[in-house]
Structure formats: structure tokens, C-alpha cells
Length: 122
Figure: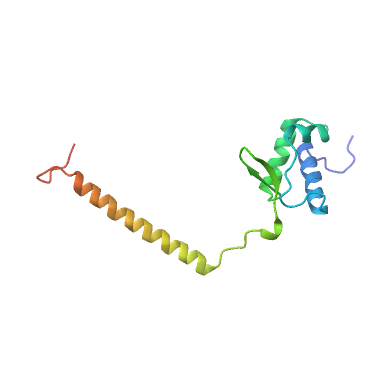
């Protein structure tokens, strides 16, 4: 029996609920979320569903995972600004200089590794 409204998966519903708490200010930037087990108990679901919901929230920029520490609400006011053209150019120049230096080092190592007489090794 269809009611005409699309059903969301349990993990999507949970992700929406947590996102709503963040939007409302109930969860503040920097707040640590409860453990998977505690969230599963609170929302009466499985830890697998909680884990998938947290993945959705992480992918959406709502939370950040810090390995072996926990999952924290992200501060949207500190969202990454797009890099300016000058910043991109500076990064590319820096990368090119590093690659050129690596090329010179490889050349020196290859020259030092050549056997006397200039014959190459098999």
C-alpha cells in the first residue's frame, strides 16, 4: 500500500535527525557525538545503521571523524573557502620546483650507481 510519499532508509532518517539537531543548535560545533552504541540505543536502531548515517553526515560536511578519538560536529563558519587563482598558481609552482629537485637527485643517484667504464648493469 503506497501513500505517495517516498520512504527513506533508516540511516537516511537518522542522518536527517542528527543534521536537524546541528541546524537547531542543539548540537554545537566541536561537540563530540555519543558512541555508536549510545546512538543506536537512543534512536532504537542498529550500530550498522548509525555507522552508515554518520558516513552520510561526514560526507555532507556535518561531522568530522578523528581516528581513535571520536566524531565531532563541524564548524560550518570555518568551511573551506575555494582557493584563489594566485594560491593555486603558488602551489603549482612549489610542486614543479619540488619535482625538478627530485629529478636532479635521481640523476645524481643514477650517475653514482653506474659502474666504472659507463657500462649499464643488466
